[in-house]
Amino acid sequence: MAKCIRYSLMVSAFALYLAGGVLDFFNVMLVGILILFFHNIVYCCEKLKCRIIFLLFNITTFVFLYIRPVIDLFRGEAWWSDFSTEAVRFTLLVLFVNMLFLFFGALLAEAVLQRKEKNWSDKISKAPTDRYGGRYRENLQFVSMIMFYVAICCFFLVEVDKLSYMSGKEYIEFFTTYTSRLPRVITVFADTMPFFLCIFLATMPPKSMTFPPLCLYLLSALPSLKIGLRNPIVLNAIFIFLYYFLRDAMENTRKWIGWAEKLLIAIVTPVGVVFLGAYNYIREGTQMTNGGGLWNIIVDFLHKQGVSFNILNIAYDKMPIIESFGQKNYTFGSFIEYLQHGALAQMLFGASSLGVGNNVVRATQGNSFAHAMSYAALGDTYLEGHGYGSSYVLETYFDYGWIGMALFSLLLGFLMIYFVYWFRKNCWSSALVLIALTEIFLTPRSAALEWSDFVISIPFLFAALFSHFGAGLCVKSYSPLLRGYQPSRCMKSLQ
Image 1 (cartoon, one colour):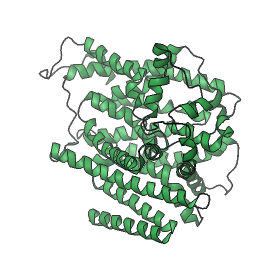
Image 2 (cartoon, rainbow, N blue to C red):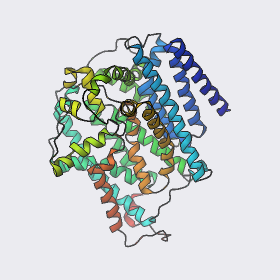
Image 3 (cartoon, rainbow, N blue to C red):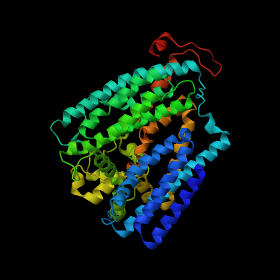
Image 4 (tube, rainbow, N blue to C red):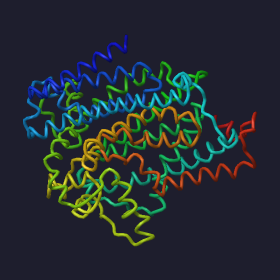
């Protein structure tokens, strides 16, 4: 039945989008895209436990890229009037192709997994295998947990430094003038916090052991929220929910999402959305123009999150200016900038820095599409700290055209399914998946590969090597033949 509904939605989406394109009715084209999104949601619900990451990525993509014109559609507003006809056509086609190829990528992943392991979706409940044996996992768990607590203490020191600096200053000044006043060793350890957390969680600790670290991880976003940044606390909350969901799907012996967790999610989600919507006005010291009310606050919050739709239209018109900055590769921009201008390159090769915050050098000589596009569109206003952000669909289109954008969407859809498979393989594949999940849901409004550039960062390499060698030194021998080990006394006391 679900497949029949899904096929009907797919056919309807194509029919409406094509009809709207031929007749030049943007609202009809938008309805076709909206139906295609519902098609992807139905697909996710068919096998939720192995498509949960794909579901959340579709939802966050819809909120960041699609929801603003959809809300304006139901309000009866001409959402296309602020942009050129060519830009609107370009943006609608990008949205349709992106949603379609995300689905194709998910289909491809499931086909590959089906050939690799028959009935793989029914085996999600199996515990992950560990080629090193139980004692290595136990010691990796202990070492990474201790280091996480050290790192998060450093992280809170950094956040307190930010709050102290921002006292009496406006939100926008954080992006233009803030630099850390703490010793470098503190900031480096602070940067290792999410990596040690993910390594610890990848060892599949019992539920009781995960609660304190995950609570601290959620609380670690509160100082950023106080400054005015809402993304960290939302991403942290999504990460925690997803980890609980994956563990719940993987284990048959113990429920990770029971009635208490479901009740908490049901209460916190709407309250959180209302708070974040109201906080936008609290931060800026203004009042809502369309009145209060819970519904208006929620709709207004979602509408503001969809600013990336405007960015797609603006970027299309500003592409000639961006091209004038010279040959760049924005898709791999975060990797290129780190290798050419990062702290390691400056220390070892005397590379030049791109500066701090918004500046002309970073916009015109760097490989960040967000900075280049913001400078091209805003000029001096960008230098004052304002910006537009980016999106993976923009960066891949600018670098590689329609084929590149479609293939990257296909890759993301593929990974959203494959992540669930990798999560149950072993400690280190699980850790890499978890680290990626801390950032990947922001990709629709950020750099294309920013979620993966951690693999070349010093904090990640330090956390991975320290955890691995620390766990190895704590055991005399470990092998796949080791069975029936007994947890050490210190680990027993923590469980």
